[in-house]
Length: 178
Image (tube, rainbow, N blue to C red; front, top):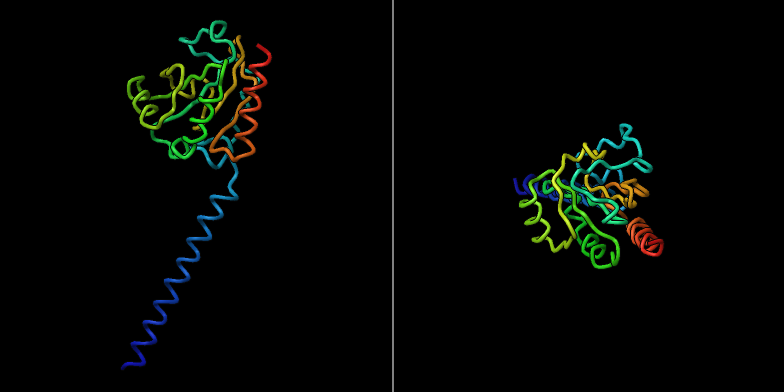
């Protein structure tokens, strides 16, 4: 009876170890080898969302000429990739000198402001809008918009370090054009 019990315990230990290794592999693969499009909440990008670069954004409360170059952060309080990206948004809002940052969210302005404040993301303005009304189908989405409301650059999903550097470089470039 003791040998049977030892065999069962050994098999259970091996099973637990295999499951733990499998879970570690899956987490590592998703963390380090996933594509940006798969890192978006409510993402339909893979099914053919068209690039918004060159399109004019229809956000009624935005005064594009007054704003000049603008970074639109399309976020949602229910998106875990938005939360994961918070450290970058904090950095972006610190380094955006001369470029306005507007958070566009489907939640009410009050709820959105509380969410942004709780996460330490200081934006210049918060706008409530259905995200699909501005051409956004996945959150988070970052768009650089010119002073006519035309999208010049767009990034979707949780960005890797290289993409984050690209965003910051484009903002720097937009500042110099002003």
